[in-house]
Image (cartoon, rainbow, N blue to C red; front, side, top):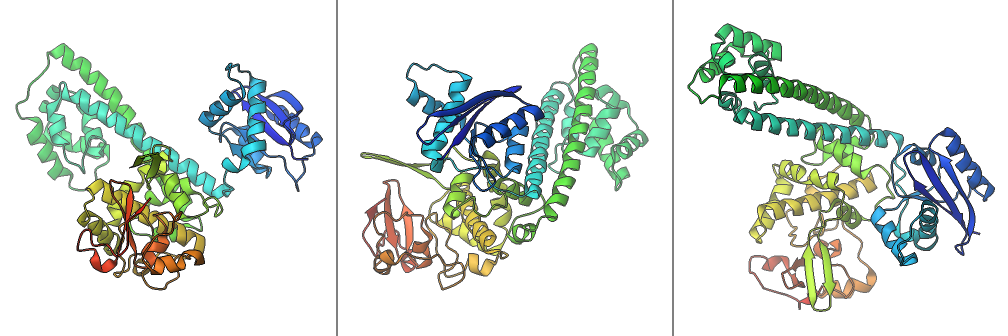
Length: 484
């Protein structure tokens, strides 16, 4: 008899329900969010037949928390159900919209009973990978907080201190730079800054942390701060200077936190066995690598193929088809952290030959800059997925061979036989040889591009099959267009 468990969690207690394969309630209980409550949960599962050989799966609406961490450590499959999906299941069971904690726990258990295949368990990442996830996300959050403080400080300085904005207007020396923090701490107002001597400015720069070219930078700042600028009334200027001091103090702490977390993240990432593979890809540096590993993890069974990873990252489009309506649009449901790292990664990668050739080709086919970058990121994700599954480093000669022309979303890596060539189903073999797409074969399938057959989805929602020799002649088809 198959039993499933549902947990409706809260901040201080959890409601537990166990149902059998027919949906009959086996046991229920409310436990506290502490060690005693966890032991009561384990006892409830044991009484229902839980064992190391046949653990009872658990459904809960969050992937975080001590309860979830302990359940994952015990080896039980834990399914994190999206709250939106749970809400839709609740409406299916009760049209009156009645709700209770116990009913929600039963509803989660029934989700696993009927649709467990639609809700995969949390990935079995190693402890080392999960630690990198914590550090990488914390570092990214620290950078976002620093950026918010910089924007707030810039907006505030614009109200009364234009000389500071002029002095630190460069990209490499913004308001979060040690020079800006040192000078604004010593002279938070324009009147005090204009009275500073060259020696005082140099001393402020040294206190801020500058080591090289102190005198040269001090002369530049001294000349800028003594220029004629507009001023607020004295009392208002003094009040705004106090606010600047507070913002500078917060910004200094945020900068130090981001720096410390960056060092910890890089150290943890370099100690992971997969770091060698990640660093072999073009454009992957000290921050992009950890952020990719943090969101992808090191569980090789998490993504069945490269298309699943691309959908998870939001780099591949989603098709909406109903009747005569056929639209292709970007994905809104995605891992936003993994999606955010895509464009910086693609921007850094196009400085190398392979990704640059792919980017230029996408631009030549009519893609805008952002679309070409997204397509390059999509291609790089496919290469990363293969390298991780095969346990081999990235090879630019195979991933972006000169004989490959890519128009679709596929991640094909070579036009000739290579370790990266995808396997083609035998049933589709004769159609691929003829240059036609079999019905039901996804237009993003790498098998098309691996055999020199290029797919281009137009605004009409149709797929145009073109030979690599006809790419320079728009609309020159070697096969008929088939509906996507």
